[in-house]
Image (cartoon, rainbow, N blue to C red; front, top):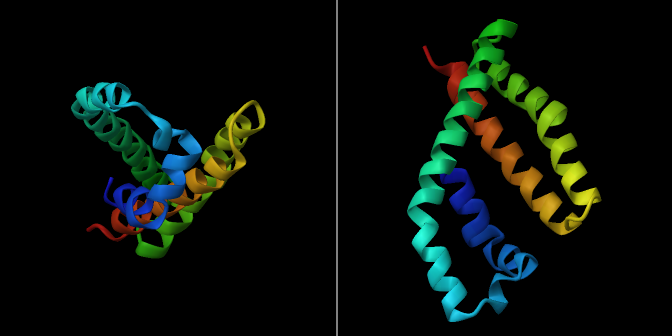
Amino acid sequence: MVVGSVWYGPLFGKKFMREMGMDQWTLEKQAAMKKKMVFNYVAQFVASSVMFYVLAGLIVGFGHTTLGGGVLAALIMWVGFVVPLKLGDALWGGSMSLFWMSIGNMLATLLVAGAIIGAWR
């Protein structure tokens, strides 16, 4: 979540908000979104925890319990799952700009998580 807050904050926040149409939201729509923020953060935390648990399983399953091994497992997970799923979303009605932002964020997130999990002793 730290990587995502940097990615969708200072790095690509304005572009993301434009692509999502958030810069055109009414005050009522903004208020409605703010009401859901706590739930969204909790749900994202749970989803990220599941993803990192699966990543840890891949790292241990591959026997790559080093920093480099964790990064390699994360890269495999990104190429094999994230990119195809996000590409499908983009091809069937999404935005290619959002696709590139999203897969970039997921690559950074998974690489950091893979490095941490792989190096964990």
